[in-house]
Image (cartoon, rainbow, N blue to C red; front, side, top):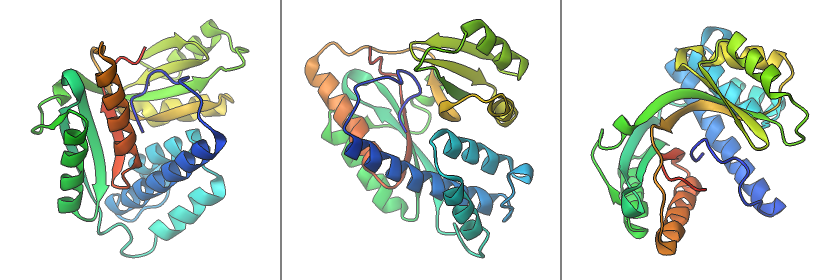
Length: 245
């Protein structure tokens, strides 16, 4: 899932949205299975903080509760998730845009080759670990839906800060709540209990600064690069500092 900001971009067809939603559910399911595995086989989010974080992401993506339960039942089975490992790649897109690609794979050679190919194909380059991550901060990011503009900014801000949020930002059609990663689960749970609806909720790599692209060719290539990464089954998240406004 691509960078946190600019939630109300060009609307795509329902078919494309449904396909993207199905792909997102598949990737979230994989994250849940690995979270259970790395949590010692514990499939209860009350005792597995990483799993709780992934379930929050699933709920914000409108993943049905039945789907979540099925994945957790599967994850509790012995040996599930053993083949997967998490690998993060860093590099540059067109005109030096910073890009972080988080993957979960059962074949690191395949994934490394594909990631390098995706960078190269659209005018970017794969870099070394640490080459761009220092320009990002890891934060919990919760995007509250306000498309109908019925929510009052001051009230939402107070609820967020009282819940333990570190920062708050109002955007057109939504509010973005930032947390320390350690506080993410508690803040999400509190806001959920208050009845808020979410566009997204997850731990993200948030850019310290954004970079604009001036050439249309660079813009087109950056869009294609993000798309091809997101379509890759091994890629879980793509973070970048491209200013898309």
